[in-house]
Amino acid sequence: MEPITFKAFAVTGEINLNKIAVHCSIPKKFTWEEPLILRDDILKSILNKEVNESQRVLLFSFGSVVFINHSHDDEIMVFLKYIHSLVPDIDIKNFDRYTDDYSLHISETENIELADEYVVVPEYEIFYPELISTVLAKSVALEKTEEQLGKIHDKLETLIDRLEKGNLRIGNKELARMTAKIVRHEYNTLAYIMILDKPDITWTSKTAGEFYDQLTEFFELNDRYKILKSKTEILYNIMDGFSTISHSIRGLFVEWIVVILIFIEIILSLIQFLK
Image (cartoon, rainbow, N blue to C red):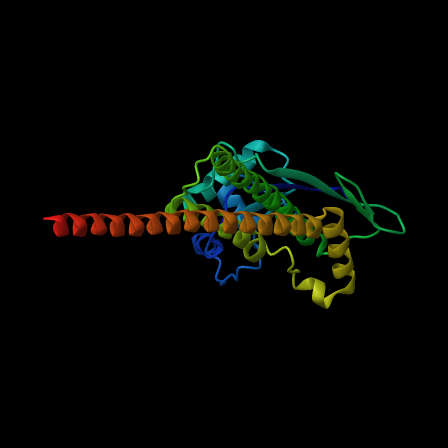
């Protein structure tokens, strides 16, 4: 059996699978945790060329796309342009910014062998392609999220530089925007990429469950997720510090205004008394 190849891309933050399913005349309501799999005649109509039965494309609601047995970049671009017509947020020019390649090999071996670019299994199981695609999709989505977290850190570093220079005033709107970015980052990681969730097949098949666990451990999905969670908690602590400083400055400002008004009132009273 020929090796099965996988190309995964994180192309946007969210893909409306039901919208694409309706456009492809697929009579099914997709939940947010299952991928949309396109193959055969549907894929043929999108690519406008013949496809073999092993070729398919998996779309995930958290913004990743995985191509199985598509070796030509022009096919990938044609498909992404089609999806872009339905999901305008996709950055066609930088579609390969977050990407990973992998392959599945069938060989006479006693145990599953995992490597950086391929996995070798003793015999083919129908669930292997979807499980590999799911792990790759989550991995590239995490890569995208990790870079976004880095940008938030850079922004906070700018605010820290301002504090070091004595500029202690930070507007409520600026604090709200930064907090929203952190919350959005946490939501995209925890709720949308679903790092901690497993495909349904892993609960009904022991072999599938063990294979999926091996893949997630090899790609360090759980460890990367924990690191992101830890960094997010640090961001929240920093934002709490900024908020405390900002509120203290405003409180002190109000107190000085009150003191000044009292002083002015005393002066006016003295002037009136001296008259």
